[in-house]
Amino acid sequence: MGLFKSLLDVAVKAASDAIKQQMQGQPASKPAAPAAAAPAAAPQPAQPAPADWNAYFAEILSTEFPQYGVRRNVPVTDLAGYAEDLFKLYKKRPMQAYKAEWGAPYTFVLYEGGTPAGIVMLGGGRSHDSNVKYLIARMYAKKMGLPYINFYTQMPNERSYVIGRIRRFMNA
Image: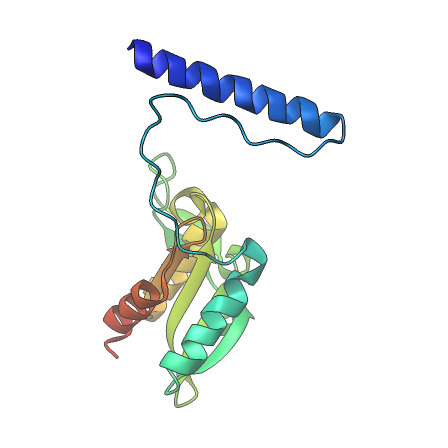
């Protein structure tokens, strides 16, 4: 416990010193390493910035899945029409009607022979789990019988993982 507290004290002091230096316009100096430093973490692979996620996925879709045509930011109504269906999205409202126009636009729609074949959605945080717009979009995709593949943008989404998941969902 004593070692942990010492490491924590060193980290807190280094952070507060860096903040003070930045506020004074000075470049932050490297903190001195504690005597019993923990082993360094493995370097993390570079991942796209949030603004680049669409480009990252568009490139993967175009190079790895050339058999599909791709459209971006497709409103739910383009596929489902102006429907109003009953879905069980929440326990407190078991069968409430939800309009297709309320759904989040599909980030990517994959087309095969001119007809929709699958949907790839990007979202940050818990957007796919709790945001009603994403839930509506997912339910309309399910109603249309389209694979709905969601990716969380705060996760690494390494190229091989993305390709594997899309292949699995699309049976490609």
